[in-house]
Length: 118
Image 1: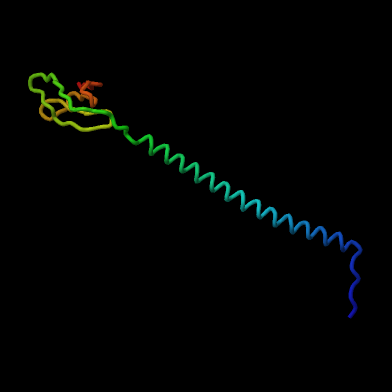
Image 2 (image 1 turned 90 degrees about the vertical axis):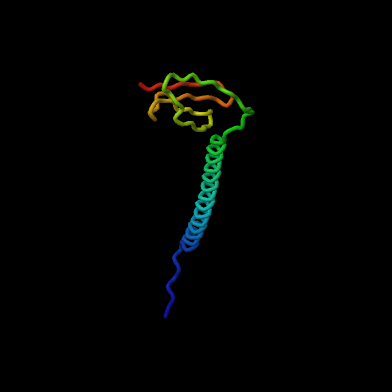
C-alpha cells in the first residue's frame, strides 16, 4: 500500500484547525465565566431586594408611654372592638354591633383620623 502524498497546504490546514480548537475552548470558558458572574449578580440583587423589603417592614419602636384618652360617645354608642396596628390603635364605635365610625389613635394618645360610615 502506498501512502497518499500530503497536500501542499497541510501546515496551513493544521494551523487553522488548531486555531479553531483554541477559539472553541476560549469561548466555552468565556460563556462559563459570564454565566457565573450573571448568577452572582442576580443573587446579590435578590439579597439586596430581600433586605430592602425586610427592613421596610420592621416597625421602629417608639417611646410610647401609657396614656389616657376620653372618647365622646353619643347616646347608645359603644366601643365594639379595638385592634393594634403599626400606626396606632383602631377603635370601632357603633350601635347594636354595627360599626358607625372608626377612630385611629396614635401611641401618644392623639386622635389621628376618624372614619364615619353613613
